[in-house]
Amino acid sequence: MSDVTSSRIEGFHKLDPAGRLQAVQRQANLDNKSVSDLVEAASGNIELADRLVENAISSMSIPVGIATNMTVDGRDVLVPMASEESSVIAAVCNSAKRCRPTGGFKTSTSGPLMAAQIQLLGASDPENVRLQVFERIDDIRTICEEIDPLLVKLGGGFRDLDIRVIDTAEGPMTIVHIIVDTRDAMGANAVNSMAEALAPKLEEWTGARSLLRILTNLADRRVARVRAVWPLEEIGGEKVRDDMLSAYHFADADPYRAATHNKGIMNGISAVVLATGNDTRAVEAGAHAFASKDGRYRSMSRWEKDGDGNLVGILELPMAVGLVGGATKIHPTAQANLKILGVTTADELARIIVAVGLAQNFGALRALATTGIQKGHMALHAQNVALMVGATGEEIDLVANELKSLGKVRQDLAEEILARLRQGANA
Image (cartoon, rainbow, N blue to C red; front, side, top):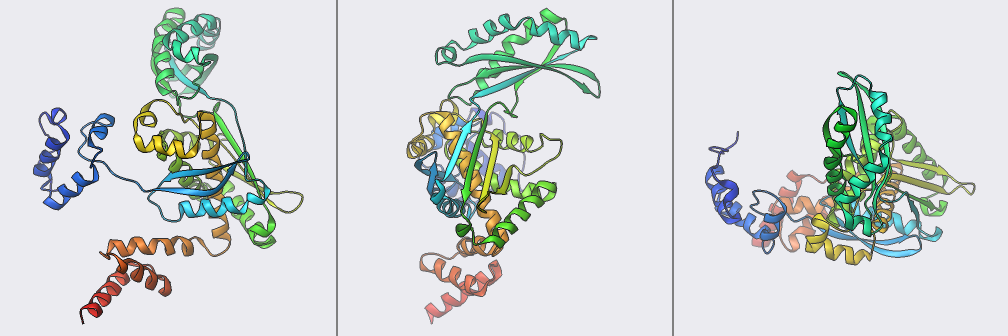
């Protein structure tokens, strides 16, 4: 049961972050240590946090680690990854190292095209409405490009229309997609603004009523593709390769397995998206929707063996990321991470992100096909458990090492080990 006396705090949004924290302390009966922890967590960043989100009181730091060994399109890159989960970054490093003999990761993209949807309702002739809109494509281009002349100047802007009539529980609807080249921006603001400007004109031209006007995160015209080959000797032989393929076929056939299989891919992808200040939720939503494009939820990745018996991995996903706008442009950590990556276009960033996703997937499949996922994961998790029970300094490694030697990484055991260590030190 919550200790909050009331969730109603008059004028809360008008307070500065310190004032909000004081109000939260009163209402939630926070102890002084919790308040101190929240203040310390936001040290030096509270003004930025207050500009990024509403009602800010603190900031939460996520560890940033570097994935090494990555070669993408013939270029070696160091990849910052923001993740709180043990073994994710280590798996990418190991997987990337194992495909370096064959040149690492090869990528391609379909270009930075985003779409916004405009929902048209109330027409008795939805197919006729569809064609009426197509006839106005030149007018639509003019309206859209007047919204963002800078984007047009940079080589982007309106590209095409895609219009569908869909059947729903309340009858047919005409759905207009405006397709926009957003260049190095993720593009949400640009395409949403264009859709908002266009909607009244569509009503005027067709007599239909427009309702929703918003981008789609199923960015299936902004797909990044990657492939890599892992030599048989780097995998561990034919049996490991074949077991990895069986694990993939399981994921591709069963949505229960696919959910966890794909979550592993997104462990890598989301970590790079977050580290660069991009929208993790948008990328995740698009990826999972894309995995269902054939009418059922499947593996995001594809795996096969080539003529020489090596293992080939393939990943194709929508990758709506940018280098301008939002946190990418104003968050100092995101800016520093982009400098580490050395990318100059959103296209380059998208290619690296899907490469990390494929590397992560290889690592998970190989672990499952050999030692099991827990051995490597729990070895790294042992230090987290040691910290959880209050170990400090040298105690952390001592507790973690004993947990690993026992083969059981449990909080109760960690507490016993720590108590014994401290008793021995005080004897």
